Image 1 (tube, helix red, strand yellow):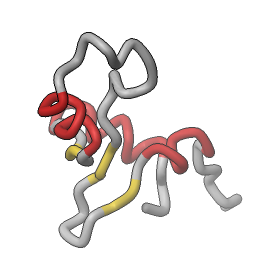
Image 2 (cartoon, rainbow, N blue to C red):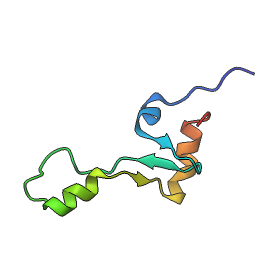
Image 3 (cartoon, one colour):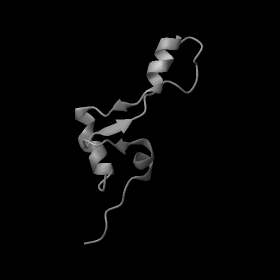
Length: 65
C-alpha cells in the first residue's frame, strides 16, 4: 500500500493539540483593520479550535496528524 499524501496547504494552516483536536487561525485580521476595535482585533489574534462539523474534512486532509 503506498503512502497517503498530506494536503500541504492544510498542513500549514492546522496543528494538532494534545487532546487530538485541530487548532486553527481566525480570519479577518489581514486588512481593513481601521474599522475594527482593539478588543476585536486582540480576540482575532488568538487561535481557535476547528468545529466538530469540519473536523472530519480536516482529518481527511491530514492523514498522519
